[in-house]
Every structure is written in C-alpha cells, then in structure tokens.
Image (cartoon, rainbow, N blue to C red; front, side, top):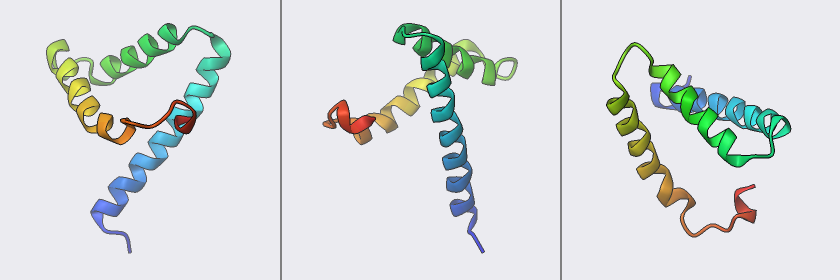
Length: 81
C-alpha cells in the first residue's frame, strides 16, 4: 500500500503528465513562447481565483520557482526536452 507521501507524489506526476500534454497542444496552437508562458501563468491565477489575493499567488509562483531552479540549473536546453 502506498504511503500518503507516495500517493501525493503519484498525484503530482499525473498532473505533471497532463501539463506536458497541454504544452504540446499549446505549441500546436501558437509558435509564440510568450503567449504560452502568459497563458500558463493565467491558469495558475485562475486556479487560486477567489481564494487568495494576487500578491499571494505571485509569492506561490516565486516559491515554486525557487524549488525548481536548482533542478534545472546547469542543464542544457536539449536535455530539458
């Protein structure tokens, strides 16, 4: 039986897979990276809409970036694909 931590990680991996599938669809919709970046950020704001303020959502995004940066630091662009 999976522990709560294992199940949380499994939930995350399922959501991550869906996000990557969405990214493929978004790339088919527009070649402009800035459009995709902004749309993904809007999705995060919409996820939290009505529960916390914009400043808090910005802090959440920054916190996630601080966690992700070490994982991606030093990797070549080709290795991220």
